[in-house]
Length: 306
Image 1: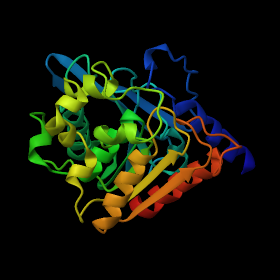
Image 2: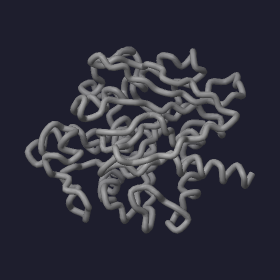
Image 3: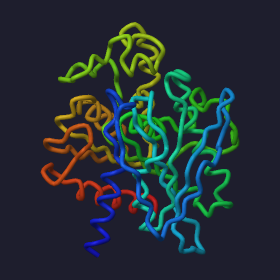
């Protein structure tokens, strides 16, 4: 048992990538796939502006008579880099989950709301093909870090918001999800400088400005449209938010703002503040530790999806 827990923690550590300021320069170790897990790679879930958008689906080799819950991993990278190759949700396959890691259009390819359009299409694809893959269409969770955490939170608060659905396929299916884990995702771009940060988030070339197609300060309407707090309502799914209080890139007040809005609306929400934690990269010296955080994530999904 201890060996399994350690292997799971190592898988988790290698998959949650610290990528925001200069994500294209990050070197990541190759992710190890457990022997009892199968992966169906490069499944095209949509085509947008001539580009195929794909996902990898990982699942236990052991067959199940009942459909399994699925957790969708959304990568970070400041909305301008990264891909589906590292799936931080992969360890959940050891607990009987399907997991799917998705690609989406980056900000140099298309500006907002293309990114959430793609994520919603991926959710609708999974729901439309649930019987084919053995997925329970009523038990879909999402998990992301940094920019991916932002997109996961958006999926949670903007379920079935028509203006964000996009023109993708599977329009007869819902894009709602049943559980959200948000690791240090941005929320209100206009308040990012309220706390110390190593980045100028309102600069014309900041990740946030590039995402919305113009300087943050000059485009308050676009900033509101990209903020998951703008869509919070009482029927949102449960949230687990995790953020380090010494994050140098995405200030932890971003998660506090979301948490407060969710609680005010009566949503089932938890927030874990990682003492001395940065932009991911948590370890045995942070409180809670990396292993404890992973255990909290697993327990959260078990409670919401099983």
